[in-house]
Length: 217
Image (cartoon, rainbow, N blue to C red; front, side):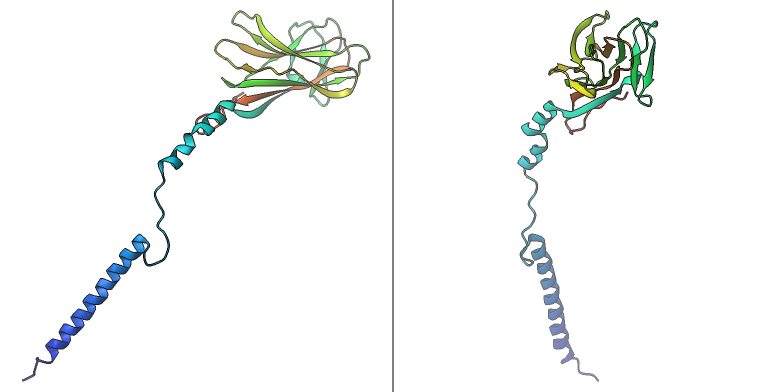
C-alpha cells in the first residue's frame, strides 16, 4: 500500500507557488495600466481648453478675415455690348482689340462667392498707342440693370505689355441683390490697344472648419 502522507505536503507547496505566480502577474498588469512599473506617465485626457482651441477666437478671427484668393478672366472672353462693334483676338487667342468704329464697351459677367470681400482688380493689357489709353471697370448692377458703383483701372502711357491696379475696393459680395461684371473699352481702334485680361483679388469666406468657399463657375 502506497503512503500518500508525503505527496500531500508537496502538492500543497506546488499549489501555493502557482497561486503566488498568478498574483504577481495580476499585480504586474495593474502596474502597467497605471504607469507604475514602466516608468512612463499615463497620457491624460484632453482638457476642455485644448478642445475649445479649434473653435476659439483666433479661429473665428481667421474665418472672418477669409482666405486670400484670385479670379482670373482672359481678355478674349469679353464681348461688345453692341453687336455693331468689329473686333478680333490676338496673342494666340488670349487678347482682344477693336478693328473699326464704332467704339463701345466690352464686358463679361463675374461670379464670386457670396460674402467674399473684393479688394482689388488688376487689368492686363497691351498699350503701344502714343495718345490714347484703355479703361477697365469692376461694376455692380442692381435688379433694374443700373450701375450701383464701379471702380476704374486704366492703362499707362505706352509701355507695351503691362498691368495696372485699381484702388482698394472693399466691397462685400451680395449675390442676392446685385450682379457683377468687368467692363473694358479702348479709346481708339487697332491692335495698339488690346486687353489681355483681368485678375480680381478677394478674400473668400470660410466655413467654421476653415474650408474656403469658391465659385463653381
